[in-house]
Picture 1: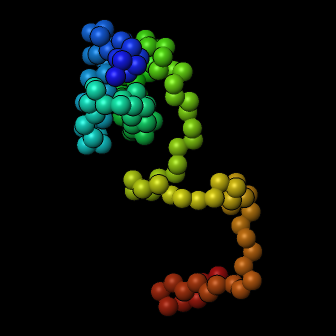
Picture 2: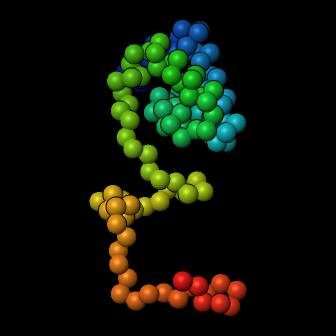
Picture 3: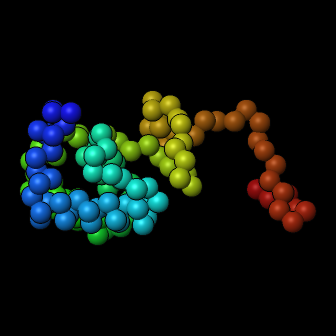
Length: 121
């Protein structure tokens, strides 16, 4: 408990707390997730949602918070975000990702494409 309190002394600054509340409100309105100030890993959750958001306002607010609190910059390195489809992550082999875009695999059998009852190409 003491280590968490000593790490989050910056939350006692009213201007920083205002930015955190603003981030929390934007996250709740977009994702429907309510983050609490006493939650373990609050900074990590804020960074994750700021990376996933479509809201430029949330991104700007998070960047302003990171500029004023240098501890937030060192804790979270950016990792490539997983590809998403309709809110669900797409699981794929990382080594195949680059190969798929470079060359398609040749098919041993050509597939017939039928459009409105007619064979096309």
